[in-house]
Length: 136
Image 1 (cartoon, one colour):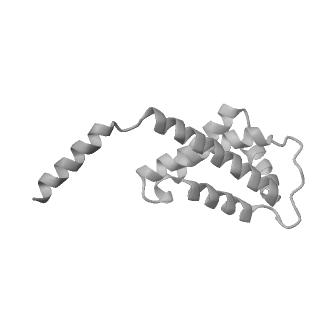
Image 2 (spheres, helix red, strand yellow):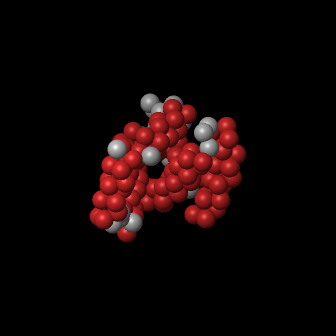
């Protein structure tokens, strides 16, 4: 999942308007905190779709529609998001900071999930003993 986020960031960075010179700051720039929330939602949906479908050609349209719903949920238009993303992507330090916030948030969520969904210790023993029986 981390690789997916990093790749997504680099893909969008490569597509931005002249990243070396920077993109003009949009009038309705989405704040970094709100961008993090949007990007987390987009990454979670993409990760789910990647698990279900082998290739983006199978889920590209679904991802686009889901992205529009996420933007609507957060109260932004696609144009606002694209302009804001291009702005942040043209500033390497800002994009790295956004990416770090996304990773930190996802790691915290994963840790909470792991703590609430642990495997009972005795189930591991049962699995090991079942494996030993099948080996003999």
